[in-house]
Length: 551
Image (cartoon, rainbow, N blue to C red; front, side, top):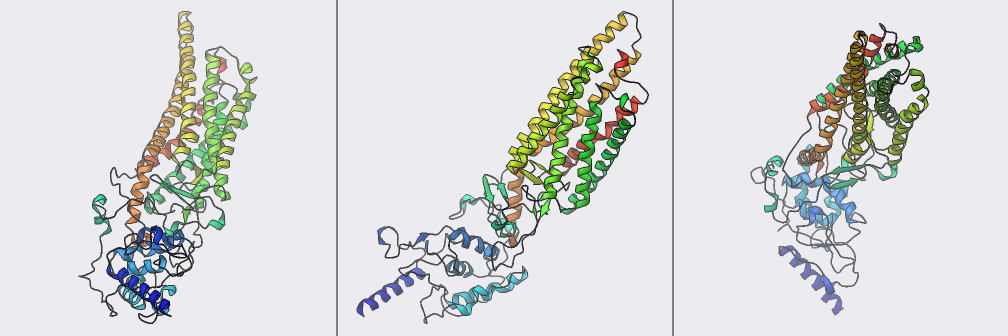
């Protein structure tokens, strides 16, 4: 019996020291007795309380600190509001209980719970978060009736006072130098519980903010980068230009079908280029009419049981959302194919003007043109699908690659577009040099050059109508790639100032940048303008019999 009394006195003394000292290190090194289940606290919210060792499973049967830390995040804003000086310690005593010589966690005392609840439950209700049942104070032991953890300096509840506990201006706090805050450390982006994706759905979501990648986390469909008014304008803007592009390309294709013999090489690639832009424009029109059903998914079921915070719709990632995958395949495949058909068009012009190939000789090699124009985009499309690099586009309503992944943007969009544009421009310039030589010879021989000069003007205008928009699109994509990481950090900074998301703020406040909405609108316009002007050549051809008749 004496040994039992001695053990009980040791435990009481330990708890007394715990509540009075500013911070203690519990059972470190060789002093750890018996069970050996103490572990350092890793939950950021609880790393500066009066103890630094915890035991799991905790009172709520969380098996790991990561699970408990994710759930306790939802209470962070109320701690920041300072509605009760006991709330932080109370929550930590529940989610990360102190580790002692006992093999089970010690619950908080009832008076500690009552003090925290009395000061904070009304403010929680303002955010639609009632005091949870698993934190009901009646479930915790009263002081003196059982072993419990308390830090309340008495059992009488403190009444809230606006003068004593003023509301915190989160945005003002962001201007503080974080290196001067006691114990401050940058833990990077933490995914809010509202953005979490249930693991049982087998959806490979991830969100990169700064240098940190959060798995099973999606970007919100609304409120990231652009306002709702900007999204609505973008949908209308893209929808109108896509409709005009589709009508123009449809006119070109129908004109070809009516009289196919009139469109022979080297100008026939214009028809296939128009077909590609017709498919791209039709996809954007479908994205416009679909709203957010293609580019967004959810809301998914909450990943944490018992939480009252509803999940929100997130931007689609991966290939599990079939409408998104289908629209991606159409938009990406035909946009890349259109660029290759532009290269083929300039190549055939060069073969006809520079190397004096007839249309029969060029057409004899048309199977190689089709192989390059359709096989290369198909291989790239399949590679993207295999890697799951498909993202929803919140502005257009379709899906594409590289929208939320700068590396994918560089490898699958920027690099190919630059290569195709450079190659096509080389062939175009080489063809022009050859036409100038032909014009010089014809003038020297006294032959009229009116038709040749008109042809050169037409080719030059068509070349400008393609290369200038293509250059602008590439410039806009470079702008996105260079600034994307800074945009994400700025968005993180904005997100952490919203109390309902309960995430820590970043420590880097330099180079705060936001995307320029106008750049995105210019990009979409330039994407469609080539298809709209593709009928330029067809309108001219109605007055001419063909390219090769001039030679």
